[in-house]
Image (tube, rainbow over all chains, first blue to last red; front, side, top):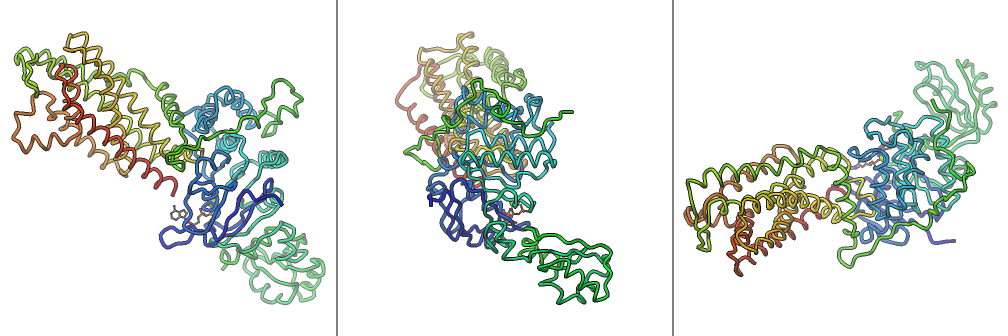
Amino acid sequence: MPAPVITAVDLVKKYKDFAAVDGLSFEVAPGESFGLLGPNGAGKSTTMRMVGAVSTRTGGGLGILGLDPNTHGPEIRSQLGVVPQADNLDAELRVRDNLIVYGRYFGLPYSYLRPKADELLAFAQLEDKAKSRVDDLSGGMKRRLTIARALVNNPRIMLLDEPTTGLDPQARHVLWDRLFRLKEQGTTLVLTTHYMDEAEQLCDRLIVVDKGRIMAEGTPASLIREHSSREVLEVRFGSARNAEAAEALKGVGDRIEVLPDRVLVYAHSGEAALARVTELGFEPMTSLVRRSSLEDVFLRLTGRSLID
Amino acid sequence: MTERSWPAPSRAEQGATAESIDTDAVRPRVQRGILLPSLYAGNARAVMHRGWLVVAKTNWLIVLSGLFEPILYLLAMGIGLGSLVGTVTTSTGAEVPYAAFIAPALLAVAAMNGAVYDSTWNVFFKMNYGKLYQGMLATSLGPLDVALGEIMLALARGLLYAGGFMLVMQAFGLNLSLWALLALPAVVLIAFAFASFGMAITSYMKTFQQMDWINFIMLPMFLFSATFYPLSVYPVAIQWLIQAMPLWHGVELVRGLTTGAVGPHLWWHVLYYVVMVLVGLTFTTRRLRALFLR
Ligand SMILES: Nc1ncnc2c1ncn2[C@@H]1O[C@H](COP(=O)(O)OP(=O)(O)OP(=O)(O)O)[C@@H](O)[C@H]1O
Ligand SMILES: [Mg+2]
């Protein structure tokens, strides 16, 4: 196995006494696409910033491309393409200048940057906006520009913190395609997302983080196998009656989860579970049988606190 | 309305064969410095260039307006008041016309004002109301690159103002000695010191009220640093206070050069500014790291 490009061992980040990241250990292989999932405040962005060598760890070990970010910040960052959670484009520069000046920060020559900027503008479909002010772009356009900007130095590792938040569905799908291509060319991808379909699509392997700790790790398929049943039955009884019905349905399927608007019954066979529900004398307003997804894993591992 | 999806298909997909760039050939290269490799990537000029791009698109009249202030003082005080005053004795005992006495002081002030302008208010806005430095520090730049780049930008403005003012002095015949040529590098040093010190102080400021303190110090320093009359008019205690302030050293240094009263004592002023540069750079870099790489 080739040496990992990212190695984290018991990584800790504390703000005063509060541990935002509380002992994460993981490795990312070259060319791998690695995901971080977790609820708001789990510590994903904090981890990304440490990996991006813009935040100093409080404890544990971290190696990026074999280098220690504490001592080799500039060298590490020169190989990274970073899409931060909040856009930080240069509002005083025009769209195209944003790309060129950013490339200058990497010490790249104009002869390379001028054609590269045009190529990236085309990539982000912002050719018409080349001379616009950044503030005049829509939110999604800014996101696209940020992503294009991250590619200016041909990074070996892309760090994408919720890259598709704010993009319209087409833009999301085509960005996925774009990321696949980068991956094919050998770029390592590390991304966080709140879209489970995105994680399923893009990640070879992922970790689910909550309160700064790893709750689960594996491929999307293996996580579903381990932490969820084969199928899920979704039934609605009207928001007033959901909790009461769920109580009575205890024992149906492997496990029951109550969401505000519906009840989820985890079972090997959704149809069989539905038959059991009707047998027990319940008439759901709507019912739906589907395969388990990463979302179910996520809810199981991290979701309860949201519902309680 | 465009039908195209985003991102656009790459050129290869479109079947374009023309000079597609071999992207792998150009990976950024960071020279790993012997000094402070985690703080410095040797690329401060990229930061400075970014600043130029922004300044170049602003109104040049506003940029140049900073030059007029010392010229107005020179006309009003030097020529106007000077006709009443006649000559003044410098700290080295030479008798010089009043205009030639205050002109070098105003030159030092021009350098100071230019340097402080960019390194305080401009930096304050970038630090607090934009994510500029955050973006910069996600690249291979280190905090020392950012600090140096911004300081050099401020220095450039100081040099612009001072250089312009020197031409005016020449036109009025106020450069009394060939040593005046050395006033230019001296002015660079003065601007460098004020820029780096100004940025260091600004990096610790959090509110507008705190920023106003900078003006509160600058104005009396301008008026009382032996700018318009010799230091000897003050009681000794006040003299010491003024000699501890940075502007007085610039006034004395430049005045020594333009009036030709040169001696080894000028090196003390140079030393003062070198220390100021180093202290300013150190604190700015530390502060930037603490704020943006924590
Ligand atoms: N600079 C900071 N100072 C103090 N606390 C911080 C700081 N940055 C983050 N935190 C705290 O660390 C925790 C983790 O934050 P982080 O931004 O990493 O979460 P996240 O997983 O990215 O969440 P989200 O999905 O909302 O983006 C939060 O509780 C947050 O309040
Ligand atoms: Mg986040």
